[in-house]
Length: 74
Image 1 (cartoon, rainbow, N blue to C red):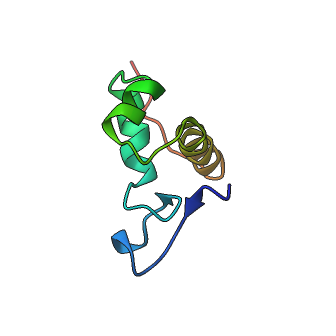
Image 2 (cartoon, rainbow, N blue to C red):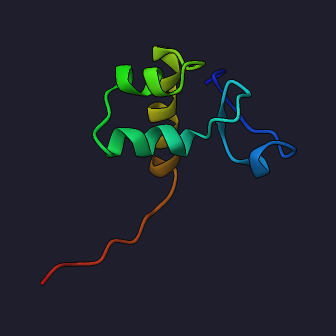
C-alpha cells in the first residue's frame, strides 16, 4: 500500500495516489463508470497501472474493515 498516501495538508486528507492530487475515490469512480485501467491512465497520465490496482485494493480493504448496513428488499 505504499502507493496510497494520506496527507492532512493535501486534498483535505483524503487518500490519494502516490502523493499526487488524485484521490483514490476518483480512480474507483472511474472504474465504476466503466473506464478500463488503460482509459484511466490515458485520462490521468501521472498514473500507472499499479496505481489503479492499488486504489481498488485500498477501496476493497476499506469496506471490508467496517460493517455497512444494507437495506433489505421486499
